[in-house]
Amino acid sequence: METEVSPLQENTPPELKRTPLHAAHRALGARMVDFGGWDMPVQYSGIVDEHNTVRNAVGVFDVSHMGEIEIRGPEAMRFTDAVTTNAVAKLKDGQAHYSGLLYEHGGFVDDILVHRVSGQHFFLCVNASNQEKDFEHIRAQNRLDCEVEFASPRYAQIAIQGPKALETAQKLTKTDLAAIRYYWFADGEFAGAQARMARTGYTGEDGIEVYIAPEHAVRVWNAILDAGRPMGIKPCGLGARNTLRLEAKMALYGHEIGASISPFEADLGWIVKMDKGDFTGRAALARQLERGVTRKLVGFEMRGRGIARDGYEAAVDGVPAGWVTSGSPSPTLNRNIGIAMLPVEHAKPGEKIQVIIRNQPVEAETVPTPFYKRTK
Image (cartoon, rainbow, N blue to C red; front, side, top):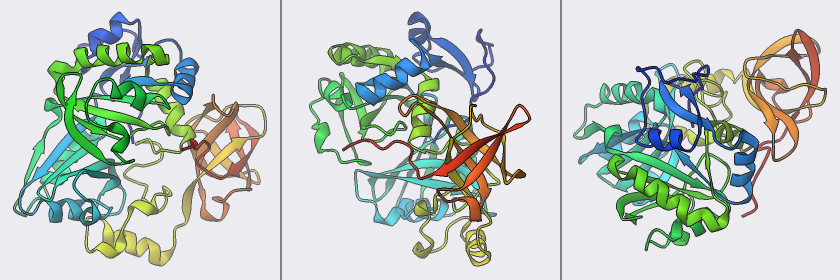
């Protein structure tokens, strides 16, 4: 879950938002870009170097641009279940899951993480450029006994990712991080600040995402870099975050998901629990299931010479049939990979397709995903 990168901006226009770590990024020599209205680091030492550091050791990301929404009250669980696709009622205290916010027509408002703090308190992490829209979408549906808070100003978020992430983070907290299962979280002290520590991430690696008050962000960021120095930690930007998430086939808002794409088309049917009762968008999804999905996302690898880029046309037997939602060289696999929206009959491994690169069809083949899966 993330949002689309805008064109590069070398200087920070005054209208761009800044995270509490903005000065730290500048001091480290980061190359900054306009990312959904935020001035964010795209790279420090280089995208491939940072990517490989996360795959082999540990990297740290500033994700304070992400949004937070909190839902509290006697009917918080019932309401959160009604506005999201996954089964909120099955969450236990301290557990999180990946889910979707949908419009009534079944397309995505956003993809989100839902954390159950208690039966009367749910903590949502949403995409940066969608946070105000998400809040209004949720708030407008609130007719139950609960409060919906736009909580983003109260949080900074730092992601520690990689096979040495827990070893790094454990130096900074008395909370037993190894005891936190994947997609669970714990509240406690981290680097001297009150924090929420979630075993989640957007890289395909193990790691911890730390939510803290913005005033502690710089000190905590520096403490993480100090703690991880023996493990070879490096600060990482949005460029590596994108290649890492693509290898793990994690959705990017504005690419794999959006208002015109349903969860079933996005190959995310597993986050939709049609049997849980009514929720926003359910009727449209039921109609789609009855008719049958006509298109779907599928992974592919380039067989010919060329890199598939986001938005390139995809063809089957030379006939235009879909488009590339994300594409890039894979530093881990040393191959050119991508995800495409194709007619459902071709959205399965082993299909020969073509990607149109500079008006020329280049051979590719659909493959199983994720492209990369860590060894646990």
